[in-house]
Length: 43
Image 1 (spheres, rainbow, N blue to C red):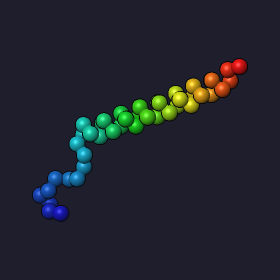
Image 2: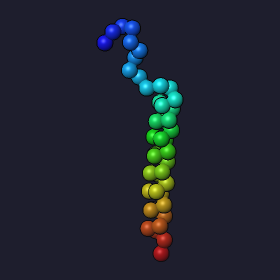
Image 3: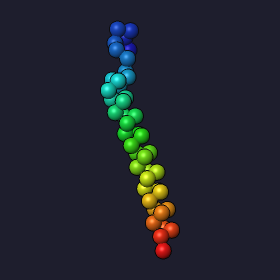
Image 4: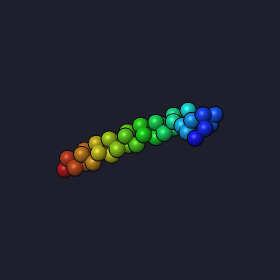
């Protein structure tokens, strides 16, 4: 790798999109688990 080459990091926009997808996946997982718990308690 030459010193003049740009770093191999993804652009800021891509990093923000990946972070948003991680948060969405976490929220979706927690909401599904909560829904399953509530439905299992339903008589």
